[in-house]
Length: 566
Image (tube, rainbow, N blue to C red; front, side, top):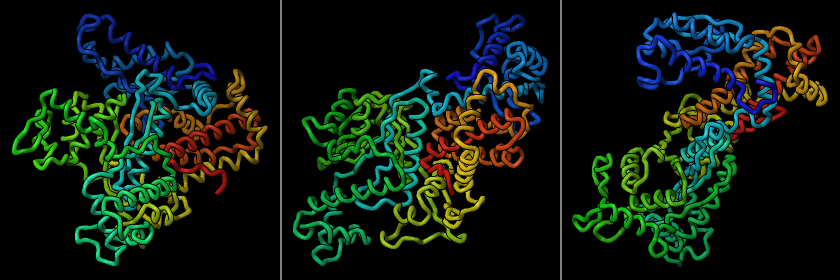
């Protein structure tokens, strides 16, 4: 690959492996005639956990063995020799390991060239993988969607950080992404909210099944006419205030603004309304029926454990009817994929929602329902009690105030969304290497400080030499810490692609930490500014710039700041 190529730096190696695999899989000696038999899966190209096992390893021979009827280790030798012929001096050597893995040891020249390509890509390094692969989609990510009758709490904070980071990752990967907040502003809960506020405004007790907490009393004092307006009117006014507070809280958590705020109440407006339209679509397809005075949807025909009510016997629409209409509305807006980020209490709604989507004629695989697990705040090894204003929960605002937005986002994202998070308040506030977000940010700041000492002109010169046609070739043999850092940097596009495919921002957090650790080892082992000869200094400055830029990109995808000073 030539320096400056916009392609992902590993593309040449991947192409050589795929070509070798295709050539061998259709060659003479196969038990099946060429082209016959099941299609083989693509061979893997992975980084071994230990450097002595090579820079990359592939299972190509193990996949070929059943097709070709030859011992895997014998085929591994053929794979290695074919790759050596294709890659020439870029492949220093190969080893056959275990049952038939091929371990590849790339040359220093290849590492330098690949780094040059990554640097030449600039801010686009790692971007657009979905677009290049021709699989980019128009995606709507609906997340947070907190009930507007209460403040944002820690559980909402995790949902918000996750949905925001996932949206950033999908967009950077090349998808067209829009964000939406669904506002549950219809139904009896809004009236009950208004009743609670109105009662407090009149000096009375809130209803026993009403809303409580300091925020309800605050609304009773703030809303003009709360004592005299109807509960429904008070509820609607209060929802407006709560949504404004939600926007403020989300902005403080560094959640990028939503493209749209979809009101549940709008689903009941118009003739026909979206709800009426959706019920008509389901009826036309023969998936609804009446029983016991209610209207039912045959969700059991589509994998649900039982049928579900759409309209109660008293004529009221269920929440399920509104949710079904909402997903139909998103379908008709032209999104190729819908991603809903739900709270832990929504697990039981997955099967019925996918069943309704299928009944509407949609592909359930295009509807992703991601369930967030709970957050436990821990201080001194015990569950933390931080709330002062919000009642029986810790608000999002309190969390950000306590540990800061960077620590909040990191710790909310550092674990998979389907596992519970125990957020250690003491560790999150600590400014030491024990605190991973501090450690990663400090690595970025350290590089920025080093580059400032070297001077902007020297940094530009180093980049020009490293990405130029001849400059990088003058560098001496790579130090093991240099090589380890280069290879880890080259893995960023693949790590991002894997994180996107698995809907896993926590993989980016883990990668950022590993990259910071790798740079720290390189900085410990290799002098950068002042290294001799000057060509070596140039290479190490350029490598440091690549590390700083990639750390910054990873942190940006997490919504965490990349400071130049700490």
